[in-house]
Image (cartoon, rainbow, N blue to C red; front, side, top):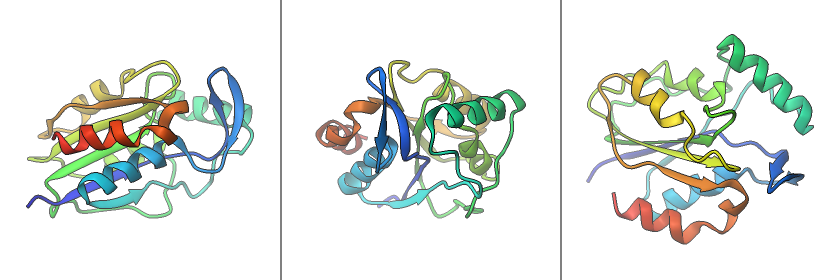
Length: 170
Protein backbone atom coordinates (compact mmCIF):
# COMPACT_ATOMS: atom_id res chain seq x y z
CA UNK A 1 0.00 0.00 0.00
CA UNK A 2 1.42 3.37 -0.97
CA UNK A 3 2.03 6.05 1.59
CA UNK A 4 0.41 9.45 1.03
CA UNK A 5 1.35 12.98 2.05
CA UNK A 6 -1.09 15.87 1.81
CA UNK A 7 0.78 19.19 1.90
CA UNK A 8 -1.49 22.19 2.05
CA UNK A 9 -1.55 25.91 2.59
CA UNK A 10 -4.84 27.48 3.67
CA UNK A 11 -5.76 30.90 5.00
CA UNK A 12 -8.39 31.94 7.51
CA UNK A 13 -9.64 35.46 8.16
CA UNK A 14 -11.01 37.77 5.49
CA UNK A 15 -11.19 36.12 2.07
CA UNK A 16 -12.77 36.87 -1.28
CA UNK A 17 -15.88 34.71 -1.61
CA UNK A 18 -18.30 34.95 -4.55
CA UNK A 19 -17.58 38.63 -5.13
CA UNK A 20 -17.51 39.86 -1.53
CA UNK A 21 -15.15 39.80 1.43
CA UNK A 22 -16.13 37.31 4.13
CA UNK A 23 -14.42 36.13 7.29
CA UNK A 24 -13.54 32.43 7.26
CA UNK A 25 -12.82 30.51 10.44
CA UNK A 26 -11.47 27.60 8.36
CA UNK A 27 -9.64 28.10 5.08
CA UNK A 28 -11.07 26.64 1.88
CA UNK A 29 -8.03 24.51 1.13
CA UNK A 30 -8.08 23.05 4.66
CA UNK A 31 -11.53 21.63 3.92
CA UNK A 32 -10.34 20.03 0.70
CA UNK A 33 -7.14 18.59 2.23
CA UNK A 34 -9.16 17.07 5.07
CA UNK A 35 -11.60 15.49 2.60
CA UNK A 36 -8.68 13.90 0.73
CA UNK A 37 -7.37 12.42 3.97
CA UNK A 38 -10.83 11.17 4.96
CA UNK A 39 -11.18 9.44 1.58
CA UNK A 40 -7.79 7.75 1.21
CA UNK A 41 -5.82 8.29 4.40
CA UNK A 42 -2.36 9.81 4.47
CA UNK A 43 -0.47 12.34 6.52
CA UNK A 44 -1.71 15.94 6.59
CA UNK A 45 0.97 18.62 6.70
CA UNK A 46 -0.23 22.24 6.98
CA UNK A 47 2.19 24.81 5.59
CA UNK A 48 2.26 27.69 8.09
CA UNK A 49 4.30 30.87 7.86
CA UNK A 50 6.31 32.25 10.78
CA UNK A 51 4.83 35.68 10.04
CA UNK A 52 1.14 35.22 9.37
CA UNK A 53 -0.54 37.15 6.61
CA UNK A 54 -2.67 40.04 7.87
CA UNK A 55 -6.24 39.13 8.75
CA UNK A 56 -7.47 42.09 6.67
CA UNK A 57 -8.03 40.93 3.08
CA UNK A 58 -6.65 44.02 1.34
CA UNK A 59 -3.50 44.05 3.50
CA UNK A 60 -3.07 40.33 2.87
CA UNK A 61 -3.24 40.63 -0.90
CA UNK A 62 -0.83 43.58 -0.84
CA UNK A 63 1.71 41.51 1.08
CA UNK A 64 1.13 38.41 -1.05
CA UNK A 65 1.51 40.40 -4.29
CA UNK A 66 4.83 41.85 -3.07
CA UNK A 67 6.06 38.35 -2.19
CA UNK A 68 5.00 37.03 -5.58
CA UNK A 69 6.73 39.85 -7.48
CA UNK A 70 9.92 39.35 -5.43
CA UNK A 71 9.77 35.53 -5.71
CA UNK A 72 10.01 35.55 -1.91
CA UNK A 73 10.20 32.38 0.12
CA UNK A 74 8.59 33.19 3.50
CA UNK A 75 9.93 31.29 6.50
CA UNK A 76 7.74 28.45 7.72
CA UNK A 77 6.98 27.29 11.25
CA UNK A 78 7.87 23.68 10.32
CA UNK A 79 9.39 22.04 7.27
CA UNK A 80 9.39 18.53 5.94
CA UNK A 81 12.93 17.77 4.82
CA UNK A 82 12.49 14.22 3.55
CA UNK A 83 9.64 12.68 1.58
CA UNK A 84 11.39 9.42 0.73
CA UNK A 85 8.77 7.39 2.63
CA UNK A 86 5.93 8.76 0.48
CA UNK A 87 4.80 7.56 -2.94
CA UNK A 88 1.87 9.92 -3.56
CA UNK A 89 2.01 13.60 -2.70
CA UNK A 90 -0.93 15.95 -2.85
CA UNK A 91 0.01 19.62 -3.10
CA UNK A 92 -2.97 21.76 -2.16
CA UNK A 93 -3.39 25.51 -2.05
CA UNK A 94 -5.31 28.54 -3.18
CA UNK A 95 -4.70 30.05 -6.60
CA UNK A 96 -3.63 33.69 -6.16
CA UNK A 97 -3.13 35.55 -9.45
CA UNK A 98 -2.77 32.23 -11.24
CA UNK A 99 -0.08 30.92 -8.84
CA UNK A 100 0.26 29.10 -5.56
CA UNK A 101 1.16 31.41 -2.63
CA UNK A 102 4.90 31.73 -2.04
CA UNK A 103 4.89 29.74 1.25
CA UNK A 104 4.10 26.61 -0.76
CA UNK A 105 7.32 27.09 -2.72
CA UNK A 106 9.21 27.66 0.56
CA UNK A 107 8.39 24.04 1.37
CA UNK A 108 8.52 22.40 -2.05
CA UNK A 109 11.94 23.71 -3.04
CA UNK A 110 13.50 21.79 -0.14
CA UNK A 111 12.29 18.41 -1.39
CA UNK A 112 13.33 15.78 -3.94
CA UNK A 113 10.32 14.70 -5.99
CA UNK A 114 12.14 12.08 -8.06
CA UNK A 115 9.84 9.09 -8.66
CA UNK A 116 6.96 10.66 -6.73
CA UNK A 117 3.37 10.78 -7.94
CA UNK A 118 2.12 14.35 -7.53
CA UNK A 119 -1.49 15.53 -7.53
CA UNK A 120 -2.14 19.27 -7.66
CA UNK A 121 -5.23 20.54 -5.87
CA UNK A 122 -6.32 24.18 -6.15
CA UNK A 123 -9.05 26.24 -4.54
CA UNK A 124 -10.01 29.32 -6.49
CA UNK A 125 -12.61 32.02 -7.04
CA UNK A 126 -12.78 31.72 -10.80
CA UNK A 127 -9.28 31.01 -12.12
CA UNK A 128 -9.44 27.22 -11.97
CA UNK A 129 -5.95 25.70 -11.91
CA UNK A 130 -4.40 28.93 -13.20
CA UNK A 131 -0.69 28.22 -13.74
CA UNK A 132 -0.28 26.28 -10.50
CA UNK A 133 0.03 22.85 -12.06
CA UNK A 134 2.13 24.08 -14.98
CA UNK A 135 4.60 25.76 -12.64
CA UNK A 136 4.95 22.67 -10.47
CA UNK A 137 5.55 20.50 -13.53
CA UNK A 138 8.47 22.79 -14.41
CA UNK A 139 9.90 22.88 -10.90
CA UNK A 140 9.42 19.41 -9.45
CA UNK A 141 11.96 17.47 -11.44
CA UNK A 142 11.50 13.73 -11.63
CA UNK A 143 7.86 13.76 -10.50
CA UNK A 144 5.01 12.11 -12.34
CA UNK A 145 1.83 14.16 -12.33
CA UNK A 146 -1.60 12.61 -12.01
CA UNK A 147 -4.91 14.34 -12.64
CA UNK A 148 -5.33 17.54 -10.68
CA UNK A 149 -8.42 19.00 -9.08
CA UNK A 150 -9.77 22.56 -8.96
CA UNK A 151 -12.49 23.41 -6.43
CA UNK A 152 -14.32 26.73 -6.37
CA UNK A 153 -13.31 28.18 -2.99
CA UNK A 154 -16.80 29.27 -1.97
CA UNK A 155 -17.94 25.68 -2.55
CA UNK A 156 -15.06 24.05 -0.65
CA UNK A 157 -16.95 23.46 2.62
CA UNK A 158 -19.58 21.44 0.75
CA UNK A 159 -17.24 19.70 -1.73
CA UNK A 160 -16.68 16.51 0.29
CA UNK A 161 -18.38 14.16 -2.18
CA UNK A 162 -16.58 15.63 -5.20
CA UNK A 163 -13.18 15.61 -3.53
CA UNK A 164 -13.56 12.11 -2.08
CA UNK A 165 -14.75 10.67 -5.40
CA UNK A 166 -11.73 12.23 -7.16
CA UNK A 167 -9.25 11.02 -4.51
CA UNK A 168 -10.60 7.46 -4.54
CA UNK A 169 -10.32 7.35 -8.35
CA UNK A 170 -6.53 7.82 -8.30
